[in-house]
Image (cartoon, rainbow, N blue to C red):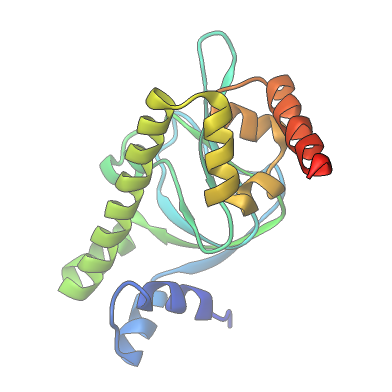
Length: 198
């Protein structure tokens, strides 16, 4: 039987649960191994699951009319990911969600989540808190994209999410930051050279 301790710790930091409540909550999740480059969400198919990452990394992205890729979200250990618009409204997805590494996830289906919410106000509160955190993160990203330069966005990522910067492929990070891979490479080199001068 899989160890749900990471999920329990993650949830209990956000909401006080009894041992029985934590067990019941986790019992609604199933364990899945995901291979590198495997898709867990694809456009035109409804996202039936919300995923909690135990180990590994994921990238959610869309493809523009010109074939260019735009990274919307990353997820690493102890983060959540899905195409939220598709999952919440149970309509066809617009995003790809792909594993960047061999990964382990816990997934909960839309129906199982709905049953948990009906069963207890406590469980409903957990999902509300998760939704609030996701909304706040997305809003912060929109504001950064509108008000900061590409270099400032890179510096923010380095400060706030160094694990992401050092873990995901450069092309994916450049796409997320709204710059070319070449420009990101130039920023990295500039930063390395600046450290050498200190």
